[in-house]
Length: 420
Image (cartoon, rainbow, N blue to C red; front, side, top):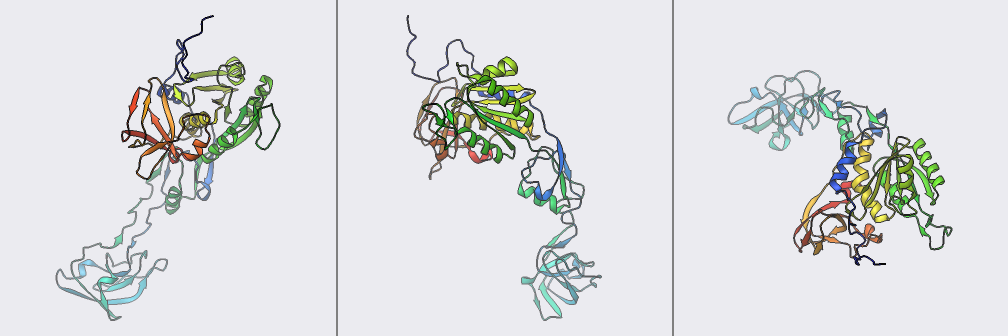
């Protein structure tokens, strides 16, 4: 027998095998997605993180009435001279937030008015308290103030009936403030997407358990993936760990399809002897297996099982994490009724050097140092889970060859841009 030349590169592209570029895989994934969840009404007070199912308009203007922007004195601008010093008698009463002045302020008079107070009839301009003197019956100030100064017109921020937020928007705390201010007490939102999570492999044991095959390793993927999904606002259906048994895997996939809108599996997505997930999905489901030109990652299965989308992630935790961020997060967002979200990215100087071969996209676990440079974890080994915990984001290196020097610009994707 004549062995092949030694390559010593597990990420090398085998001759004769077609590898899908990351952008092509993302485009193919995006083209086949649609919302799979229903719609329900939700009180605004409980709507944080939910996805709007319809456009929402203002039920009333904000502010709903003209009001004062300062503490001061209000008057009609036409009643003051153009030059010199203004002296105006004070009308009885005052206007305060929640305690409006009743009646009309007489011409050539001023009235005490506080921040947020509804502007009384007969007033169109307010002078700052600090710019006046008073003896309790009159006020005095210098001319030069413009008409309408220190007032907030009704609807200055949002007009009644104005479109505020569109379909597919994931609601943030500041959105809830806007909705409440404009009189919206409930909104139509999509039901929370339910995602079932399973991990596979005879070598996997539950954390804290000493059961399993000799040399078993604890299941790191399921806690990580379940928490990712919860942070993204989805309901988690934990299917547990499944050994390398095709009947058990099939039964677990059935359970996921019955109780969830999408399924996450980790492990068994490649083409080895014990990669049963991809074999079952290919034989009995509708499988699109992508050998994606990505590091870490590569084996990524997208399939339908009983008409439910399945994301077959790599078994290596680092690869599973990266593929979940790059592929699963935007896809699940669309399934949940939202928009396809591109990750936030920033160009920063590289705090490292690297020579990279062409043909695959690489994601390095990295953080930003005190000089604002991206510094990668000390080892690129995809088995180093500690690098995930240490890092603050990913440096994305494009598909082509690269000879990177310190200070060269690189693309940094912070984990915060992925919602974590």
